Length: 234
Image (tube, rainbow, N blue to C red; front, top):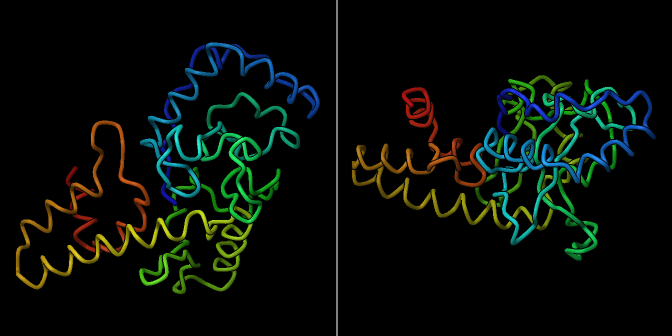
């Protein structure tokens, strides 16, 4: 999970009246979906996220999973934040039923079912979110960072569970990506081709236009200190 820096909201989003109840928020959001401001807001969020799912970092496209605008703090419990740009991200999966995705495979916003716990949920609008997780290259699993205090590890573990970040739909993809990158990294290190290694890191960690390679945080872990250098120099 990588931090998402939010930019300015679309003008149409700012014009929306603030709902004062969960029911009014649901109805207002339903109407908003049909307005041009919804598409503009979606576009803004996609660019802010470099076309990666805010929770899982899988690539956002219309072919495999689709995607939807996600409220970090659910509108039912937090109606006044329904049209607050800093509460909106894009999460993978547009429609679970249409895609015929098995329940145990559903991940991201559709997996948390309106769960609302600002203290416990680690989400990509928290600057330190990436510090809570590590990735196992051999399995593709995401786990709590063992260097964190037990209380913080518990938050990470709960977040992984609630968002189903070890979904069978995600883990093989993450594993294949990590293994492919590891093979190249090890070869470049063994042959002392450090300039090529830095170039390889740039291709995997820096934006290509307005997109990043999937599972950016996991890839960053493989490159270690080189990742910090490449990203800081960008």
